[in-house]
Image 1 (spheres, rainbow, N blue to C red):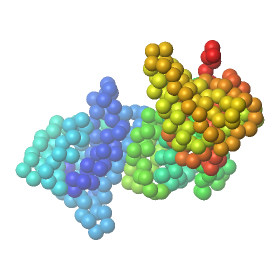
Image 2 (cartoon, one colour):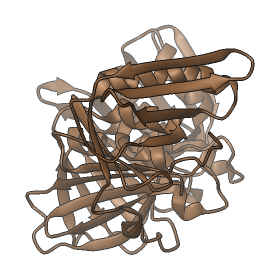
Image 3 (cartoon, rainbow, N blue to C red):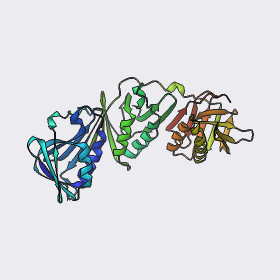
Image 4 (cartoon, helix red, strand yellow):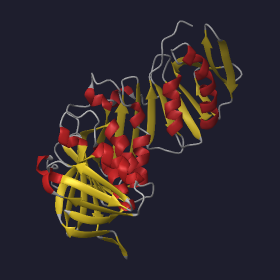
Length: 380
């Protein structure tokens, strides 16, 4: 293998695929990036068995020459060093040559590097996926859906299925659900091109979705999604992102969402967020994160918290609307702030069916999102 390649294109591809490399792998070959060079261009691949990412660099991009190939071939190079060194090379053109025993020589400007490469035949083959069911979603919408649900996943490996986000598709509606048993986030979106395509119980690791989100462009570039038996493939421009589907059955969360409420509040999202953030500073010191919310006789809403060492904080905010029974409830302020950070609506409806019933949060101008937080039982 012998090529010359533009450093910017090589670096971008390396950054994309390196998200699939685990620092804790027990399989030496998986700590590397595989290079495949043929007369169409250069393909980089990395994998940690749960996710695999492949990035293609074409010979030309528009009228710009990107890669010159003298000799095709393959090699696996150690990612940890390779990722860092390419960024720091002095020249905009990088020359790579693989010689005997996969020894790889890299030069740019006056810099010369020799790396010990590995046999590409030992690198695992990427999953084979039949592309019968493909749906497309704008990249910015996909990123938003991930951001607005992934914070609610469980971080405890004791229930692996809850460390992922549940995906389901039916009647052109794609829906995400995430829960750690103490809170729940749901986000749905209508897709234009999913006629007749259905799937459910597709659970993708939250960690994987965070890595995917970093690769998806901010613009509304379409991302193609292919769902197979135990794998999902995301096709983003010249990148292929494979993810394993988590084993197990996701719990039915529909039963914990009430359909009627005894108390409904409509509050300014920014004011509520700032108020709870101030109360959180004190509750954090108690290591409980407990903040209390209650309706006052005057019609205002009181937000308060206390610390046995530091004191108390309380403030009142005016609701835009208030209907139903008076209320006094305690909740985890960190969970509430996590929701408020991702809500894009200026106003938020908070609904309750009772003191120990789930707290429902609905952005007013977004009918596709809903959040649930379980309250705390306190003595006062």
